[in-house]
Amino acid sequence: MFRFSFFINSIKMNMRVSRIKLSSGISEPGLDVDLLLIDPVIERYKGKQGNLIPLLQGAQNIYGYIPKSVFDKISSETGLKKNDLYGVATFYAQFRLKPVGKVVVRVCHGTACHVQNATKITEDIQTFLNVKDGETTEDRLFTLESVACLGCCSLAPCMMIGDETFGKLNGKKAVEVVKNIKRKETLDNKPNQSKPELWKT
Ligand code: FES
Image (cartoon, rainbow, N blue to C red; front, side, top):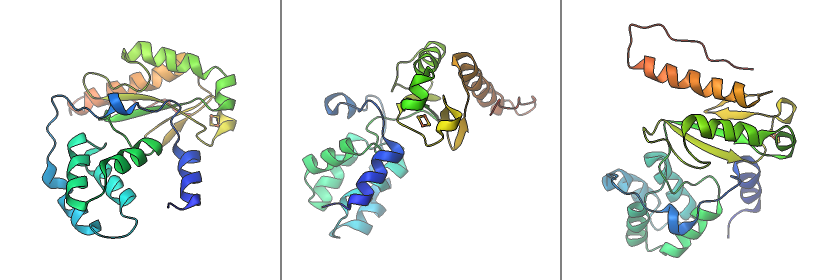
C-alpha cells in the first residue's frame, strides 16, 4: 500500500523511542481547533489515490499535531476510515497526536548515545523542565522527546533542537542549552534587553 522506501526512511530518520498510546494521545482538552484551516488540504487531496498520508501531513503542518477533531473531519469529508487514519498516524513517528511546545528537544537514545549516558541527559532535562519524556511544559514552550539515532553518532551523546544539533553533551551541558533557549525566549518578549548566545558544539 505504501512505498517501502518511505517506510524505511520514516523509521530511520524520525523514529521516536516511545510511541504515543492511541487511547491517551488523541485528546485535546481546552484547545480550540480551527477546523476551517484544514479545508484547503481536504479540497486538494479529496478523492485522490494515496491521499491518506498527504492529508495527515497537511493537518500536522497546520496544527503542529493532528487533533482528534481533525481526524473526524478528514474521515467524514473524504470517506477514509478513522481506523485507517489512526493506524497510519500512530505507526509513523513523523505524526504527532498531541500538541507540542514551541521548542522540541530531541534527545538521542540510539546505541552510540545510549552508551555515552544519554539517559542522564534526558533525566537532567526532565528535572529542569519538570516534565517527563514525551511531555510538554505547562507554558507550552518545550516538548521533550527521546528519539532514535539522529545520524551524527560521532558527536554522541547528542540532541537536536529545531534543526540544530548539540553534541558531546552531558546532563549539565544539555540543561545549559535548554536554559539558554528559555532565557532567549523570555528576552524575545523584552526587545530592549541583550540576548545571550546559545552554547553549541
Ligand atoms: S546514536 Fe545518537 S546520533 Fe547516532
